[in-house]
Length: 327
Image (cartoon, rainbow, N blue to C red):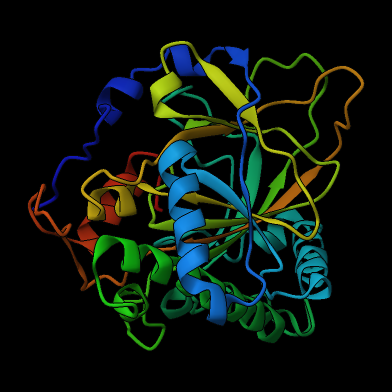
């Protein structure tokens, strides 16, 4: 049976959000940058730094993370090529079970309106018929799978740090996200936010929490708008901007890991606001990798605060509340 999503501050309460759709205030909280250089020899130190950042604001950034900048840039180029395809071509790869293409299908409870974006999602076991053919985008499948594998490897490094702090074995989350399993659910999402006129009232992405354990977000310098509102600040609506850099990855805790940690790790609201006067207001691209435990994995924290629930049921419950039609 699906269990309700709960937290130290109620997600149900925060999702009542007439307030989360409001502009709110802008704060300048620190989003810590963690240096991953020498990970193998510094793992305990890095785990301490990641834990401190995650428990404070739920967001942090990684530098010297091991994914070459040229690989990230190539992934962005592939995303641009895909989204530049004619609408009727992209429609041949429709979103189904968290894989494939959608446009304005994600409706946030915080706004009640669709996000102003399109996305294409890769979830390895679910890709039958959803890859652009070789004659449409040569090399797209092979190169995108290689990039997804790099994201997975980095995600497992970060999650192993959380495993240490939670008292699990170091490979606990790696086993729970095993790509060889037919129940593998981790997802690479390419995103294209549409150009918007200045002073538009809608949101590029309305306020939301992520459903997963951990999100790795790649952004392009100059294409900003991402903001986070830590749970302790939701009443005052204090939104902290997160600066995009080409070679830095932004990470955040998702609902699944919050539950798995018995609420020690917060999954906080974030959104993408529209450009303001004088800011770049052309198309915005980002790449997100969602570390989502395999379907068969049972989620239960070390203290047993919540009843056990399968990752399949948990993710289906969260996604169905945020997408119109098939997810």
